[in-house]
Image (cartoon, rainbow, N blue to C red):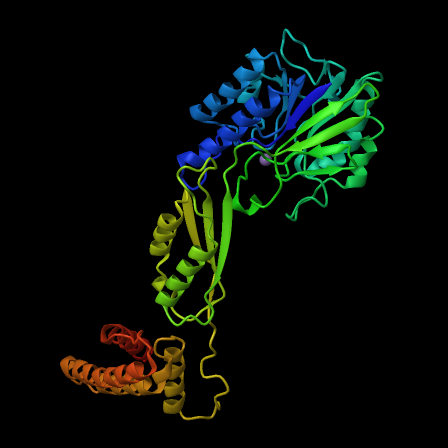
Length: 457
Ligand SMILES: [Mn+2]
């Protein structure tokens, strides 16, 4: 007996506002069917939850589902599924797309039910009604369960009781379960402890898990194949795919993990902005990194074009609005032919203490000068002449307060800046620094400083 176990196909998943990305989920699903399910002549296929990315799918997602299911149907391969947390039926409705697919004969959706006293009950599949909780195919009895969320741990003993009646002594019992398992999740959520899950070991021969988007197995008994595609870039490094499982007459399991199908390549690059003088330095640094490390896509390549994420990390010594995020993204895309490039600024502004260590008894004018100077020094572009510019700001403020003509104040600022600029240029030429700030940029800085000082009067 041979079957293919998949989970978390997430058809209809939308990311980055990219049509191509939504199609990736379809391509993976379709390729797993045509490259593995059909050639391996499997007896049935298991989908352990999250076939769809959401309960209310769009028509395209349904087309994607049917395109694959039709091939399986024509090949006479039954598809057995359970709901996951993403495509779970609405509590107030009896209808769901998963139930419709089951009703139309494309899948067999296994659902536990309740007896007259309200207890969990597992009932056999009714081919006429196209409902039921377990089904026999070949040598297997396949039993479905619900998504129990945070109450999964409490649900296990109840499920175990129901399984005692529903399981078949002579058959190979398979339980389909969509759940988090302790030790396999990075999120701080309640998950089923491994020991708790193992209480089912005497009852079940193979647990077909779903939910966690990475491959793992417990003792060669409970298997989680991982999502076919990552639904978030945080999952891109995880191993994922499908399990091709063979069970012999003695009920020995041989599970082979399959990941050879079309998958979108991802790459995550990181650039440290700490110590960068200005936006241009960051820009050229990022571009050098792209040249050196980024995965470049060739149009003749059989592999799909990658999605690249560039993370800016470290401490930023200037305003983050100066970072040319869009320019870096567009250039990186051009250089690599990536499907998509994301630039995320995760750097933090450098924290300079203002007037740190200043004597609290210092006179007001001294404290004022120190504060202005420290604020100016936060900006890498001006920190070498913070003292000089602070003087200018204070003088401009003094003139403003004594009702000097605005033109005169501007004249003073222009004069001082020209003087200061000329000095800066001369020293830049001497040191080879080509990124001397412009008079216009300085002007803007002074205007800001002036507002800061005068507004709290
Ligand atoms: Mn999922």
